[in-house]
Length: 96
Length: 92
Image (tube, chains in turn cyan, red):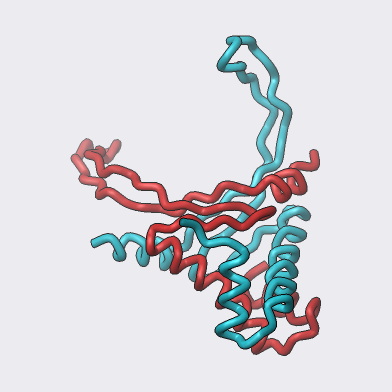
């Protein structure tokens, strides 16, 4: 089972007494703000949760694992996530 | 951008009070945290997904002193960026 946008919408609806359509609108708006910031190369830090950042990967020599053929991989930008210490401790405590 | 700046940006974009925007942001990340703590996956289409990865413990060595160190097993959330965000960020 996975938590989805639908679950988050229902949670906003129930806990904050917002209409479902409003809940979904706010959720999408929140995600869009984060996406725009990441798109501009800025990092997004959520205290107690973690940090999303954008990293530039250089061009490198790669290989097609199926054909064994050598190829050049283009430079690219990727999003990475690093979990906060607090959150990490909560996850690991939960299992003991 | 940090959490309070995200709250301000949401309040401004959606014409909400700061208090309401704070509740929205806290609820969203709180729910995602709770799901991951329960061991569930989180799937936010267009943004990305999270799942817990288990790392086995191992015996390591301090490379300077040669001393044996026991590294305990641990769990960490792993984030996989969603298709839309991946494409929007990779603009080079």
